[in-house]
Length: 578
Image 1: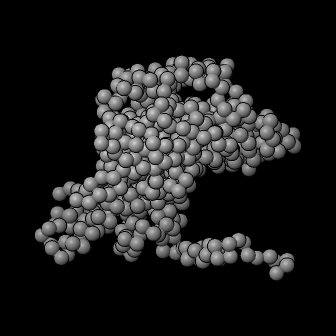
Image 2 (image 1 turned 30 degrees about the vertical axis):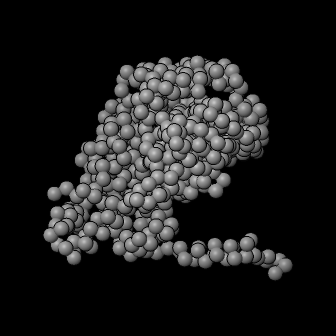
Image 3 (image 1 turned 90 degrees about the horizontal axis):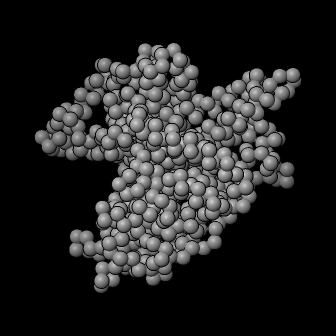
């Protein structure tokens, strides 16, 4: 009997100790016909970028030139993710991510502008809109006649989306009047189409309650924006506050159901995180090109600095981490393109790892460039400033680690709760109990789940992955039994669970990708095999450490030190003056 709690998500299955290998091997590939279309598109963009895009000038002016925006629209880049039936290019999720990777490798501000438009701005319409709504707006969004923005964040509401204060009150004619404000809205100064989230009053179970609703709002309905905010990086993108003062929106502009806006927001953000992660890969590749060029041309002590061990170490780590992030991103987009509906944990893993990977890669490249990297004349400091926002965009990495852990543990938690109920009412949960016992038996006597389709050259890496999946499941079960519902407050534990999940997903993505490469290229894929070995070896070391720290850690010591800081409101020591 199948356990109904075991999910169709690959990563969520790991929390049960299961490995649904057929979901990830063979590694997904883009359809040949779309690959040809994408190559033509990217070639056109590269030529345009070489002739018309000056990232240094964009950064200094803190705006995108109107002619550049027009050129991007003419190339069709505002309609990459919009279906062909509505005037867009209709790229798959993989094709769109690869395009965003290329754009981010040229300029961060342009990538943020295009991502703000498609990854999140009009994504709610694509995912949840009716055919009438799509026909009304998508053709103009595809050409860039309408630029889109995603309006969720408020002064008192960031990661806690449910706490937004903007309110929409339904009128006798069915329309809604919106009042409130939003902050830090990408494309806020140039958009004419906004996906806006507001509290609405609904009746449920005979009681009136506030629930979030998503609305499609046009600027012409009365939306006003503040000036562009001065920012650390991505200065060419428009980031403003938005103001809604008695903005009347017709009933037919509700996106999804009244009161169903939280589902819309989460669906959009799950998807948008992949565009961000793909952009991080593109930017990392650009940075590696710069670092390698400098390391091979800069000579010290009579030879290129690329020949020195510690520079080799930096270049190798940059390559390893970029390979890992790229493998994860396109594993996930491939899952989506093949019809997997639940990819929330996977997309969060990609965003967390991709953004942190990019930060490390940019930092190391600046270090390789040394004093030159610190000078404004060169691109390193701009790239570092542009990279920093990715750890905050689309949900901070701290929040997303909590999300990965709590979402993944929900299934095992539900099963344990049902098993507890089975103890009281044995017949009710008989099938579930049998599944639980079978899982335990397989793990104890057969060593847990196995990968059957990995290339033989990666046997060691496959065994590492196979061995640590049951370790995650055991750690999760033990944690849930120990903390119960209090696990929602145990963020140190959540971080460890999330980091193990990220590392396991990273390992399988690299193993699957390299297996495919070995089959397709044979010995020519040895470079990828080296990278895969390095990724898996380092990930296994981190997993081993995190598993150990479920039982042996200094969490309480760190909490006490943090309390010292908050109690004193500062660093309270002076070793010299006492």
